[in-house]
Image (cartoon, rainbow, N blue to C red; front, side, top):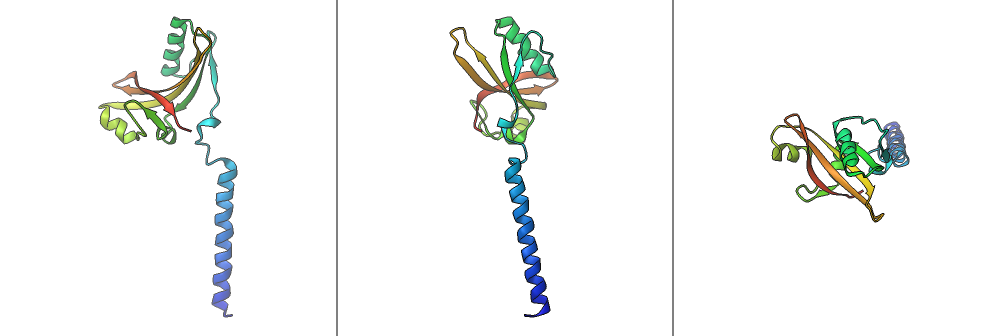
Length: 146
């Protein structure tokens, strides 16, 4: 075996170990933390301090309905989670699709809301909030396929 062949085999073995280590690390880590299950549910009641305008709207709405406590899972503007959104108006949307269909789109946010009805039935729904021309509005409601 020639000197160059030995170096080539050594190089290929090193690459295989490095690539295997990289994918093994990603598998153990859970794919980079983009999984919606890694985000915790947060309880909103009278004492909760909202972190942004959307959470303040959700708290005010629940207070007006007398629906405390409710639970939310705020995904923010996570594009990987957005691609799993299956709404009535948007199915697997991308940020570009949202911008194209909502002129003046400044920001967007996905939030899961969980609450119980008067007859103790648990409701979970995902809401896509859109910020268009400095106003937050509900863009769509749906389920999230995780």
